[in-house]
Image (cartoon, rainbow, N blue to C red; front, side):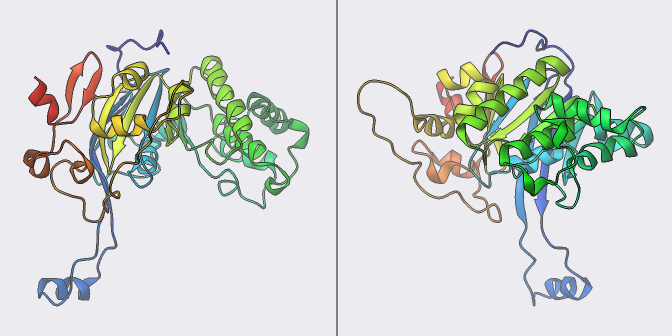
Length: 340
């Protein structure tokens, strides 16, 4: 898929720089004293993200792929400003988002919206569809005329029948609720949507409808997407570029055609080897060996080395640096130094 409106030298819409995010309970005073005296262990810390760099340009769709627990959703929430990073910075249109305040911060928050994986859990079951879609734009003074007409406009954009706007979420199917979530996100007129496994819980036929809707909205409203998914087929269909995550790190990033034709990182190669294809002859499928390590105690060096068939001693001790191996194709693997 081409990017006619997003030249590589254009200033990014969103830039993530060396972002890490850790989760853990904060010990009270007594616990801190016990830890200092050696009578207790520090509480476990989950290393969800580890110095992630990512650039998203206006008008493009960036697919974010990886196994469950690799940090995709956490990165999506940071991109949408729902979570704050433990370290690093997030730049919105070239400005560090942590330095924004007042109206500028409000505008940045409204411009980046998130569509969640479970459409039912994301909707208040006691609110009807009209209230759900209109609540945020009404609070922020975006509705100048009739609230009902405003809601109808955005429900129609999402392919939802406005005549049903007074019903409650439980009265609809999963696909209809997904459209309500899309309409609610669109109602605050965002520039950027984070889609967190937004079609994963839907039937295949409904998935295709929602994916086509996303692409139509991209053209109509000049939207930019971060599309989080574990489904490589969906990512290949909808994305312009793909970033592959493993245990909190982006290990490879490239245009979608490049990733699927010439995967570089051993983890990317292993993922793509398991994608079903309609081809003559038999294929032998083998799952990636080993289990995904715990983010509480990630392995040193390259996080993938315990499962990598090409791992060397250097992989076990040294973190590989991100390197451009082809135009706009980046990979973090020590094997690239050997090949060079």
